[in-house]
Length: 128
Ligand SMILES: CC(C)(COP(=O)(O)OP(=O)(O)OC[C@H]1O[C@@H](n2cnc3c(N)ncnc32)[C@H](O)[C@@H]1OP(=O)(O)O)[C@@H](O)C(=O)NCCC(=O)NCCS
Image (cartoon, rainbow, N blue to C red):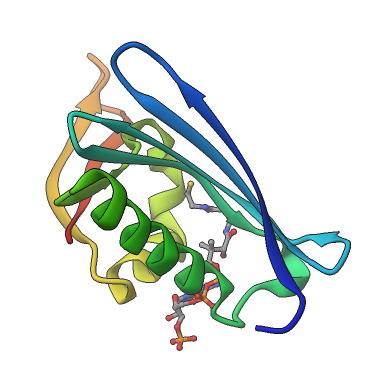
């Protein structure tokens, strides 16, 4: 991938490591990826690719890079997408993660007293 580089910020907390990764193509910021590592478990957050760069495999490429990095540097064995962003899974995002080897390991819906569903909770996990 020509011209690709990353701006990486790493924050060290007593109980976890937090990364913010911004990929650039030349001077164009094309997206974002945040992840936290706590006890070898990786939690993914804010995964996005800017609209005009989508469907070119950048999202899959960055996930794979991150997976290799946490395996090598933290001996991580699993990754979970942070679950409070769940409304997005009604859209194409679930298919994107499934294509990248993630599986739904838990699904539930919180229901209002009047029976109206207002929030689906999914765990989207990958063993690496
Ligand atoms: C989800 C997202 C990161 C995917 O990035 P991307 O670089 O376009 O994804 P890729 O090109 O690597 O796609 C890999 C596969 O995922 C699936 N996919 C990606 N975008 C899709 C879409 N809009 N509709 C259906 N499937 C899609 C495709 O099957 C694709 O493979 P294929 O085209 O060979 O069949 C991007 O669409 C995005 O930023 N969305 C908005 C933010 C978001 O919802 N983030 C996730 C929650 S934090």
